[in-house]
Length: 218
Ligand SMILES: *[C@@H]1O[C@H](CO)[C@@H](O)[C@H](O)[C@H]1NC(C)=O
Ligand SMILES: *[C@@H]1O[C@H](CO)[C@@H](O)[C@H](O)[C@H]1NC(C)=O
Ligand SMILES: *[C@@H]1O[C@H](CO)[C@@H](O)[C@H](O)[C@H]1NC(C)=O
Ligand SMILES: *[C@@H]1O[C@H](CO)[C@@H](O)[C@H](O)[C@H]1NC(C)=O
Image 1 (spheres, protein in one colour):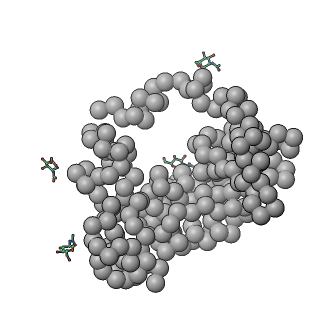
Image 2 (cartoon, rainbow, N blue to C red; image 1 turned 180 degrees about the horizontal axis):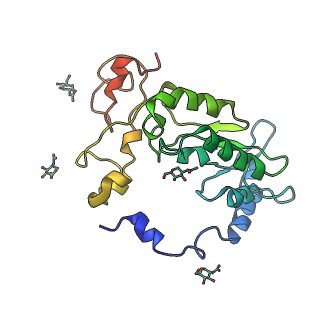
Image 3 (tube, protein in one colour; image 1 turned 90 degrees about the horizontal axis):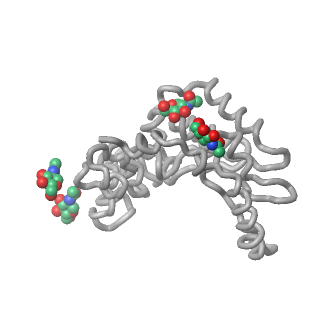
């Protein structure tokens, strides 16, 4: 079984990603599509999403004369795992980003999203509170993922019950692809059958049972 990642990695992408022409596209998106809709009450805010090194990403801020994104998502923290979590790793990540952000631009940090395991499963249950504090005290805009603020954890979904099309298409290595574990419904209350998310127990993905053990907003 050759995973999609292995197929991708077997090719050189220097003509298909991070192309200089992208800046022109972003500039035009800013000046022709977004800026005309700005008004005193509504500024159109642009975020770009790419998993490139910090030095490459900061170019998507554009320049003062030719602005592009308000910020490119900074995914450094999302790449932390229990293997490489340490104070110095985090300090290096924060310094790398802050030293690359152009003068006058606005920093940001992303700790969780729908494509990555939950903090408790990726970094460790014991660290979820301190990682939330870290995210919310770093300079700039924090981006988190629903449920991280109450320490929600991954669910297990078997292949037969999998919803994520990427995983469905890759039965041989579906565990590597599935994003269902981090996509379970928000846990609002301690009430069965579905933690206040639904009045039935037949949600698109199952609710994590730990809503019964205190992991819920209420
Ligand atoms: C892309 O990479 C290949 C292999 O390293 C190299 O020969 C080629 O010059 C590169 N092309 C560009 C546009 O950087
Ligand atoms: C931590 O480990 C992950 C998974 O191997 C890797 O993607 C990431 O780049 C590592 N980060 C650092 C700072 O070593
Ligand atoms: C998964 O579904 C297939 C096809 O419906 C079935 O043959 C198989 O027994 C199921 N496996 C499990 C573990 O439920
Ligand atoms: C879902 O609810 C129905 C009706 O209350 C019940 O019979 C069934 O056992 C429940 N299923 C699960 C998986 O909890």
